[in-house]
Length: 136
Image 1 (cartoon, rainbow, N blue to C red):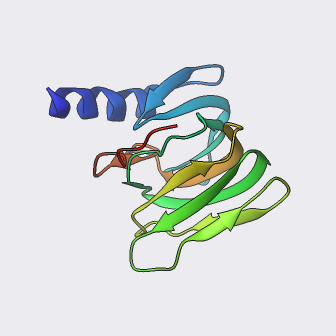
Image 2: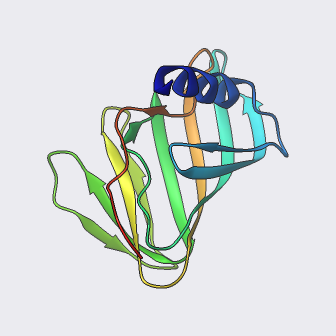
Image 3: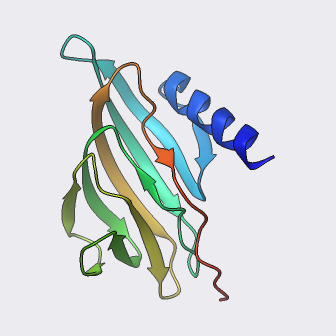
């Protein structure tokens, strides 16, 4: 059953247009803008939300992620690197090869503005594992 869900999530990520909201790997994504530029690439501007006390599933992106933190506090967990704490007003970038996820802490949900630049033929994100088991 998990494989069907992941395939549906990847398909949704590829076809989502501006105004579309969908959940992928515990992350609620709202596509604010989407354009094809340069040739063969897509630029996605998304609002990302993850509930407080939860973690997103580990995932990768087929290109660059550039993020600005709007609300909430979280640890960015990146495979092979130390965890980094982020708060509103901070920003970061994630390389296309990094397996990563957000571990939301505190009592507020996490809200991010993210720009994803990737090959047009690939989904915005690919889930590669299950979220941490956590309790509020």
